[in-house]
Length: 322
Image (cartoon, rainbow, N blue to C red; front, top):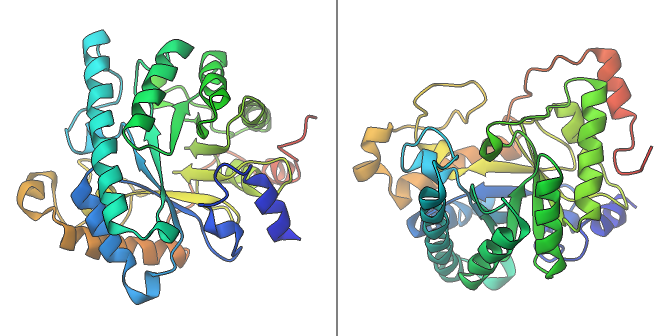
């Protein structure tokens, strides 16, 4: 029965890729990767016998590239010229990753390619549709849109209406100057659940939740006939949820250490030009995948929720209108 419920929640558009729904014991994984040689490293990691069936369902080319590979302090662009540059850059990376996925993965185990609409492309529905069209022309299977209010929802609705699989990003939204709804209070959790329902009704076929409380992540991820597949970032673990991993973070130490980052990096940013290679990427991704599948990563985030509030959120049906 649980398998039927989760399968019905996949909404059809993502169902062919979401292997966790065919085998509920699996944890669905999304991996952020940006370059062709990174996909080569990921494919090498997944060729290891104990990881051959690991359900990496999705590869996302995200705007975090500007912070990881380029060393910028954030994903917000300074104006129209930078916004145009950001879109051009990500469109090129999507094409590169598309070619690498097709070369490195057999069709029946190939993750779907998700493109992240960067800052400036969700200012209005026209800009979002133009960006989405450019991404799909470069090989993206789906797009992701950060949402903090009705403007973002309208962009989700417009893209989804074209038939393009569209995922909504809720919680911490760095493009929108860090607007965040964590679900660290019962009322705040209720607002997040309302956003999730609104995204579903706008046509979203999946959610990415970032920096929300583990209780909210778990509630949204429970099997539900009217729910959506969920990938979480810095939001702890959920039995039925998908987990997002960043390939760069598996290999390269962050400038500022954080306890919620992967424990696997072995090189610094200065070492990247010579040491950040497919063999090292494969080695570190093997370790991170094993830690994730074993339940050692990620850690549960700090929360202001007490036991009573956590129980109240856990007892809530987030996908049905109160």
